[in-house]
Image 1 (cartoon, one colour):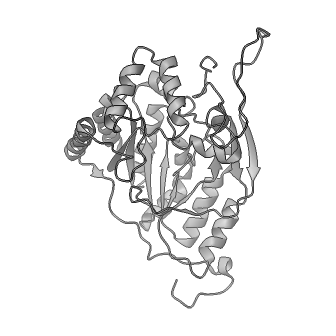
Image 2 (cartoon, rainbow, N blue to C red; image 1 turned 135 degrees about the horizontal axis):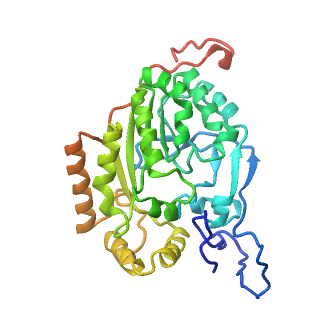
Image 3 (spheres, rainbow, N blue to C red; image 1 turned 45 degrees about the horizontal axis):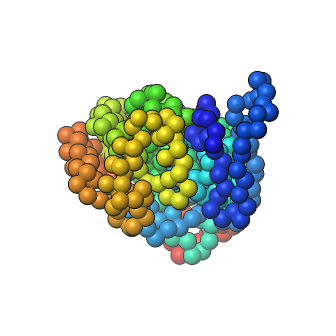
Amino acid sequence: MRSPIQGRGAADNDAGRFESRRVDQEDDGWWREDAVDGPATEVRSETARRIISRNASPDLPFNQSINPYRGCEHGCIYCFARPSHGYLNLSAGLDFETKLFYKENAVGLLEGELSRRGYRPDAINLGANTDPYQPIERRHRLTRGILEVLLRFRHPVTIVTKGHLVLRDLDLLQRLAADRLCRVMISLTTLDTELKRGLEPRAPSPQARLKAIEGLANAGVPVGVLAAPMIPALNDHELEGILQCAADAGAGSAAYTLLRLPYEVKELFERWLRDHRPLRAAHVLSRIKAMRGGGLSDSRFGERFTGEGVEAALLARRFEIACRRLGLGVGEKQRLNTAAFRVPVAAGGQLRLDGL
């Protein structure tokens, strides 16, 4: 086990659950004072076979999603997507935040999938697994390319992000919003800058995310706040403050989720607690178990985002009361516009005869 690494969420690189070989690192005393403290970020391209993913979860407000990147440099220690790196024979720990992949053919694939004769429009979510506005988006611009395609096809999109880079694409988002084709949710976990540095080491500051909300709202783009995840005895006391600051910045809607710790994330988060909040670790873990039926995770539909028991019900009630007081729409139930969808002639090669 390693000591915490500055600028990284995880301190270890345990084997993924699909790996047959396990390597344990030990300090043998051979070290250099000038050794680099922590791995650099590696970015590789990959060719995807398809770009639109579909789900049937009743807990999610969307049926389709696009993830232009694998892994996320934000390094959020609690991220439920970390175990997905196991499918690449990589660790949910440091590998997830240092070995990143971009889908180089994402834009072309999207054009093809939207142009298929049998396709029926339904809102596509960006940010279901990893952040579409993480730092490597500045160079690769896949999210922007995807938005350009969706605008040409007049296709509805929802975005979940921590990245203030979303403001770069205001020109596209404003045009989408004019036809009721987009909605953005800014994920805001804490207002405490010190806590943020540990939980989400390379994500934008709370202040930057509030400025993103303000910039989107001022531009007429529907924007809400996702207070997530709420972690018992760590940041749950901030719920009302987060909602208040977001409403003041111009958010029109809100949602929240309770901390989820699937698969390897349980061990990573518990280790992080003992490294960063040793005096509070046992209490935080006991509170999580009280809201998760005695365990640290619960994958049941209807429970995984909100929890169960008295404390979970109290959190839900606090959220409801605060949203009512602040005039925040809960979950933004208004559907986006699917009637505007059209396949551009240049993309399909010829006009469609079925009215779509």
